[in-house]
Length: 86
Image (tube, rainbow, N blue to C red; front, side, top):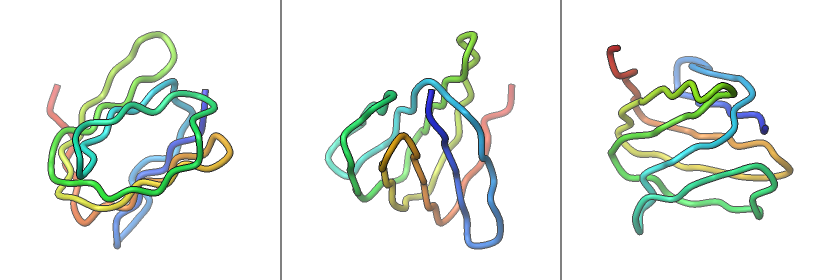
């Protein structure tokens, strides 16, 4: 498990413990798991998948931004985000 924060210009949209993240990187989709190496990368528009404990999966659509991984904390800064309706 690691801490994920999704931040827009207006607010912190999400801040919780998760098991994995799949993000639309500028060079293709990338997966983030616990103890991932430090990383900063640009994100393009696409689907962001967040998996919580118990295999609960939530999808968000982002319009681009940046992702940072450091010491089991993942911060995603996005221009715009919309949660997929269930």
